[in-house]
Length: 203
Image (cartoon, rainbow, N blue to C red; front, side, top):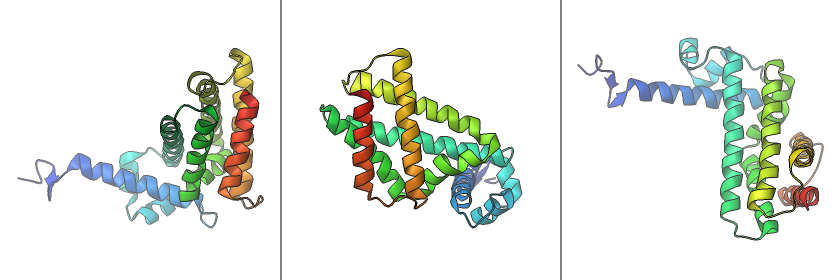
């Protein structure tokens, strides 16, 4: 029988579980990014339209779901910026602007992603270390990108790490002020400032 084999209306049990996990992740992003809501498992389940049973099907607890969202946003940031660089040609300045523009456009398209990854994650003790790890990873990747793909002058070792942290840390503060409304600036102004900063750090 179809039910015994795990197939229901042409959809396998694994596919249904994956769909529910996706709903929980999307609901976690929505609740976590909403300053009017407390980020609780109950609120996430209500947003997803699922019972707590299905939350636990994918995640051991709230912190694990939040970390999954944080990691997913970081992975998306890396993917869209790298794709933009690869499509931008050989000129280093053009490639830097393309990378930063792709990142900023991601936040314009869905500001929730920037808010949870850059702002909200810092407020949750269980996620602070992971946020720090991701920022350090992105700092390392920025130095690697400058050296390997952009052809910019880098110094290697500790100096590159310092430069990467300076750029990523400054970028995080810039985006925080922008998303919080403390800084009035257009996306293009953010792109121009960030690209100028990157080129200044590694120029």
